[in-house]
Image (cartoon, rainbow, N blue to C red; front, top):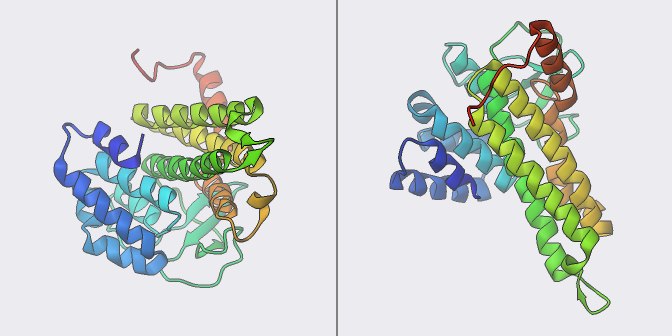
Length: 272
């Protein structure tokens, strides 16, 4: 399932204009990133989309960021919008380990694991609503996971050993299948997330899926996956940074367990 189809599934009815927008966004993200992409998204109507149709705009934009490998500081906008503040600025964001970071709206040098991202540690921050931000990051992680899976799948089909593609080997097929199931499961939780706990669980599932995807895809790609020339390492670094933002999958899983234990029962999140 592509990011565009995912966004359409969330909309009340299929919208041909959404398809045109998705094509425009994908083409823009293929050639533009960082502060330049931030400005381009404004030109394409990101502020209006976030205000008027967040249920479609967030999966579309953040999923495509993951798919294309581009980045923009728009997580600030999602958090600010949920807080009822004007977008276009930055806000300190909680990061795993009790730290706070700032995602700058300007390109600059960084010491982050993902050297492309203009993020930096700040001293402290104040509590901000994070449910919408967690869903947005979940879509970004799913998009990144799908990009990694596509790289591994392509390699498995092209790479031959003993006279046949390695995609025919059971161990490779099992890794790719497990990865696909994890990604689909994470996307399902994002579709179902409508409240704080649902958003927490969706972000945790997306982070776990991304980490599992990175592990399995690295195994499928073998030595080439470690090289700077291959794109896998860019997606792995991106996934690790995004997993830690607004709570890592490990932290959020513990937090969900504490919430359920305190309540004495697990709430119904989806009516099946």
